[in-house]
Length: 54
Image 1: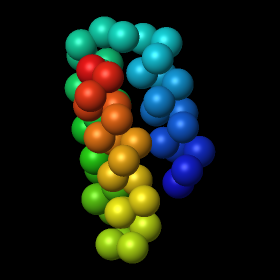
Image 2: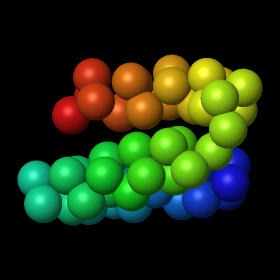
Image 3: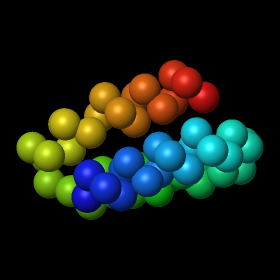
Image 4: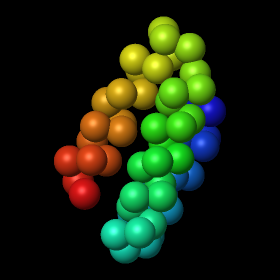
């Protein structure tokens, strides 16, 4: 699951288009939502960071 989030971050960096941002953020939320609570807390920071950079 970590590699998936890293790939999403790389995609975000390489393609800074609005539609791509929204799609990647949705995929990120979906990935985090599908994980259990304890692991989910670890990935709140990267997604929060992505939203700030956007």
